[in-house]
Length: 235
Image 1 (tube, rainbow, N blue to C red):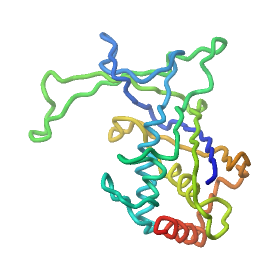
Image 2: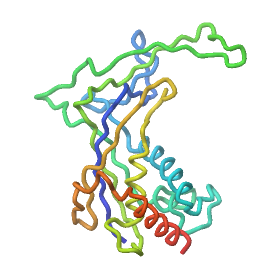
Image 3: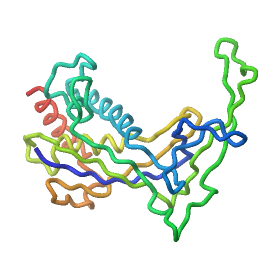
Image 4: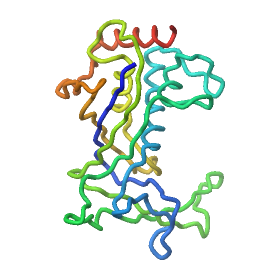
C-alpha cells in the first residue's frame, strides 16, 4: 500500500455550471457553487464522478475485468477499491478544486460570472414548452486563472512489471487526461475543461513532474500497464 497524492490543475475552456441548488430572484433561477469568499469552486464529488466514468472507459479499452455494479463481488475490483461501492468506501479522497486568487488583497472579479437563458424543450413535439424560460448562472473564469486541488489515499498494487508508476496510479492519471467536461449543460457546450496532473507523491516521495506529459502512453507501455492491471484485478 502506498499513500498517494495527486495534485492537479483545471483550466476552463468554456463557462462552467455546477449548480448550488439556490436561486437569486431577478438574477438567475440557479446560481453556481461559491465559497465564503464568493469565488466559484469545483467540488471533489463532481471530479470523482467524472473520473470514475473515465477510468471505467479506460478499463474496458484495456480489457480489465469490469465492475459488477451494486452487486460486484470482486474484492480486487479496480473501481470499487478506488471510488467505493454500496458495500465499502473507496480508498481515495477528493478535495475541492479552488482558484488561488480571491483574497482580501485580490478580490474576485464579478466579470467571472455570466447568466444565460434557456428553455425547456418538448421532445415529442420538438418545440419549446410554454412558460418554461429559465436563467442559469455560469462561472466564466478566464484561462489564466486555474482551479487547483488534490486526490489522496492509500493505493495498493504490486507493480508487477516494476514500472515508473504503479499501474493503479497510471490508470488514475490516464483517467484525468480523459475527463474533458464537468458540470451541467455539457451538451450545450458548457463545462469544457483541461485537467493536468502537476505533482505526484508516493509515500511522500515526489515523482518527477517532467515525465507527466507522456505518463507512459507509448504502445509498449500501454500494453504493459494493461497487463499489470488485468493481473492485479484478477488476482
